[in-house]
Image (tube, rainbow, N blue to C red; front, side, top):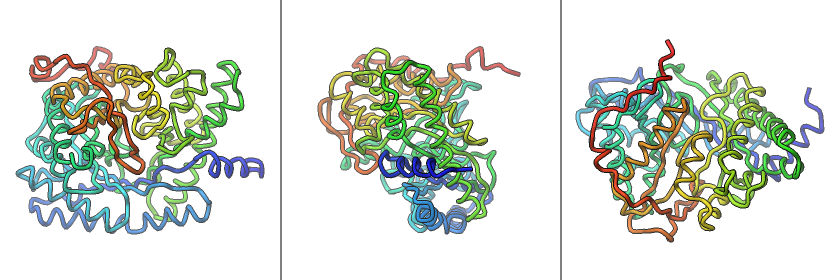
Length: 454
């Protein structure tokens, strides 16, 4: 039974500590939309999305009113479009028509983002995969709500270095085509290793082929709640610290479980997973970096940061899995720079560098996220950064990702402005030494020896 003290405690988390359900994401399979006629395919996609998601926004708003729980975003993820479009699309321009259809469908049902303009190429690319990837810059430049992701590696298959090379070029082209908005298109593009099928968070969400026809996934976030809880045990030892984080994560996850079950029941769509991720926002008091500072660091990036983040990530997962039988997605702590005011402060103070962020990705939930870099960084250097991050994911059997924004026309010391939840970011320096000969070798980096489990 829930007692009045717990009700009041949850109300306080919502009203004073920025607790929210970050997103209800409706995953929709488009496999039954496949057709060899491009026009028919686009019509099938539009009809399937608008019919299945017709009540998504309304349902989220009703749950908000009934339970007084903020639900910040209502989103859609779809089957990777490289799979859906291969029968009908012969050129990158053909795939762009699908991106525009996704955008139109998202606007029709009122969601803020739709993910799944994606390709899964961890072992190699088909012609359809390559066409979709080559269409990404144009697709993101010509749509408002479409998000794209490409999985280029996994622990089981290794890293497709041809895809890594291509993605460095695609990121740079996307930056060029959206340079009027500080290269905003790159904020909607993620490169993955070990991408999960059930991630509700953008820009990397897609509906995996092993999922049901439609599924409800919920992402919960509460960095402010965790920070407030840690303030109450300031000076305590690590045992007390860990117990406090676990208990707080449990309470946050229960809120997400309630929302997910309600959304599932009201829409008649099965519940998939809860993703408990400490995903920050630019709002004051909603920062993962500030949690690390409360643990005992002067700034995120100081010596001890990687250990503190590992502790935080592990306790969040331990608390979350006790609160729901279906914790999935990414679940843990995110470390985006532009979306976390504490991270921004650390960069501006000189405490946090790209290399330290890379070390932190060994133990956090995702990877190098929402990092603005100079617009003149070469595509091969971008590919090198991607390769490094994919290697971390492959060897450590975890999801890693890269969302870099080369801001065309700006350099170190300047700031990129993205707006909304995407925030703003100081442009960080990149190692100036070249890696072109490495990136241009071509082929595939083999899977690590510990990948052989059968």
